[in-house]
Structure formats: structure tokens, C-alpha cells
Amino acid sequence: MYNSKIGIATSFFADQNFDSSLTLALAHEENISWVQLFLSDYYTENPHEIFTLQGLATQHGTKIICHSPLLLNLDAKDGIHAANLSLFFPQGQEKFSVFHFDENETIENALSVIEFYSTNGFTICLENFYQDKSKDAFIQNFHDYLALIEAAQEKKYKIIPVLDFPRLFIEPITEAVDALAYTELLLDKLAKTTKNLILHLIDFSKSSQKREEWLPFMAGIMPYEKIFDLLKKYNFTIISAILEYENKEIGRQSFQALSESLDKLVSNKS
Image (cartoon, rainbow, N blue to C red; front, top):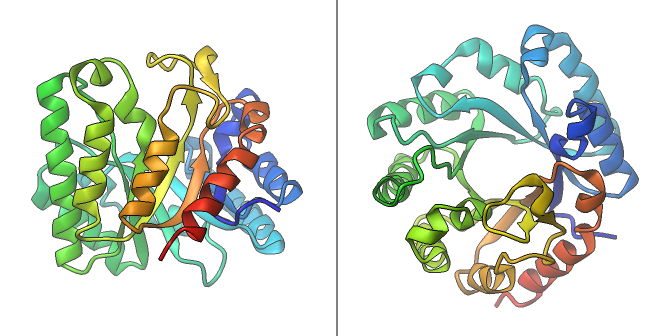
């Protein structure tokens, strides 16, 4: 059986319109504990269809993370959007909801959005995201992301960082900075305010990260062995490690290696 922290995203079925039901079925078939669903326009327009997914998750005991299509800015402070997100979660499960960090929003406004969701029973899962990949913009984004998480933690809002490590290793960012050094700095800073993380993972043969260059986890150039050593060093707890491949066969080929990496992470904790 695979490590219980492994998750898969609906991207596994990109060739079948990111089918959520097929993703849940695959997770059940492979004994994968977590599924990341996406609040697409279809579900926004047909929220009653979400109950079918919630029923499947409840039936199979699958834990759900829901990815919003919105950046974390004032546009996300929307009661209808929150209500639709809420429908995905089986009764009693923590409402883990992923939003991309918005480098163009103020910390004050972003905090008000986090407060809105936190007071409505959600846990905001804030994913690192870089709209402008130039060096100066990346560095500013990097520090603003950390500042927002620290500010939210100080106010006791429900927030978990979502670390998409491959985003740090994509061109042109990886050409402008030492991506591994920034990864360690990111983990070092986060460890001072939180010990819980969600991971988004793929691997690839080239830092351009074109879809045809994607490879199974640990089969590419991502320095995952070093990254997992850092996760162990800083004693993080991984809530879930979500594979975000857009090819279910490459995704399936990643289960064993990711399971072993997560097992080592836990077994080596003091």
C-alpha cells in the first residue's frame, strides 16, 4: 500500500476534460488517500453536480483538497464561491482550499480574504505562484509570500503553505537565482511559523518544463532527494503530497518513488 499522504489531481485526466469522477475512481483503485479537485466553470454553473463527487469521496473515504481557479485577492472574497468550494468536502473533513498567491495584491487585502475564509470554516492553502518570472519580481514575490503567511499565522488564521517546488526550478527563474538555495531559504523561513505543508509535485528532463519533458517523480532533474532532506531537517509534517501530472500513466509510475520518499521522511523524524 502506498503512503497515505499521496494525492492525485484531476490533471491526471487532462485528456478527458480533467474528469473528477475518474480521478476519484483511480484514487480508490490505487488506494490513494487524497484527491485534489478543481472548482471549474462547469461546477460553478452546476453546483448540484458537486454532490455526486462529495458522495464518491464519502463512500470511498477519500480526503479532498479543492483548488480554486482564483488568485488570492479581493475577487476571491465571494460568498457564492466559498459556498461552492464548501460543497466538495465530505462532512466533518477540514476544508483545505488552494489559492494561488497574487503578487499584485496588498498584504492587507490578502489578509482580509484569508480572514473571510478562515472565519467561514476553511483552511486556506496558499500556493507559491510567480506571474512575473524576472529576477527582481521573483525575489519580491518570494518575500511577500513569506510575509503574508507570517502575518496570517500571527492572527491565528487557518493557513497552510502549498509548495510547488518545480515552480522554483523553471526557466527563467532557475537561470536568475540559485533555485535550491531559495528552496532552503523558503523552508527555513516557513519553519519558524508553521510545520504543516502541502506539496505539489512533478518531475521533468529540462527546466523549460514543457509537457513533453515531464517524467515520473525522481526520474528527472528535480533535486528531490535534497529537498526531502530539507523537509526532514526542518521537521515538517506533510499533510498531502499531490502529484499534478497531466498524464495518468506518468502519474502512476510516480506512486512508488513518492511513497518511499514520504516513508523515509516520517521514519527519520526524531
